[in-house]
Length: 267
Image 1 (tube, rainbow, N blue to C red):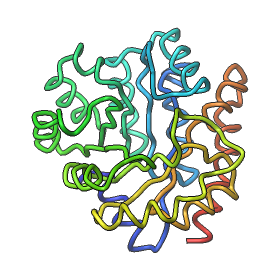
Image 2 (cartoon, rainbow, N blue to C red; image 1 turned 120 degrees about the horizontal axis):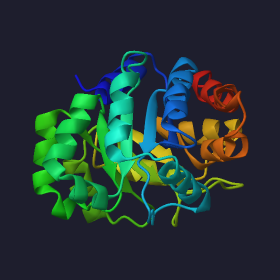
Image 3 (cartoon, one colour; image 1 turned 30 degrees about the vertical axis):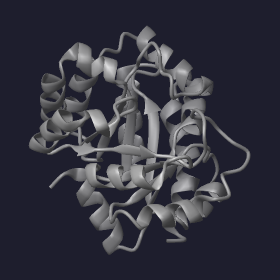
């Protein structure tokens, strides 16, 4: 069974909420990324989302844009990232989603990318700029490889489009809780409850809510409406602040752990 599906089944059986962390791959190095993934797995993170470095990350705010730039500067390539994930599987079986732009798949070769991702131990792909209307062949290849097709929904998503995405997605639905690009926020959106309820009218897939969550209080609040929460920019910012320090991994784990605890103890 796909690790993402298995993880959500386990969470449901244990009546727990899931914690998803996003970090930029190769920031500050691929070796450090591997250490961070292992550390976060041990801290109770349920799914790790790795951003594949790209020169034009249009869906991202400044914090994640700079992480992508640092990943490129560290020499991280799609091939090297997959090699790292393959090696990581000797240490951790935490589900991994790659957050990636379609240009990379197009350049690499869609069929080869999907096959190589599955062989490396990737569990799902979130292709930011590939809409479901243009994804028939991609989805078929993903299903054959046993990988989850993660799609985004947003506050502006229409009912008809929710139905379409719900039929085409697998693994989980990623609900973007606010309009715009990724980034830390002082307050989370106030309509999360209504929107997740609306999404549930169209799918039984777990819903993971992201964009703007940056502290335990926000994490606890959002987790009350969803099967999982996603924390990205706040963690990436910690890596930016402490990336050159020898205790980077410990600092990031220390930052993440209270948020993990906040949603696990209130599930």
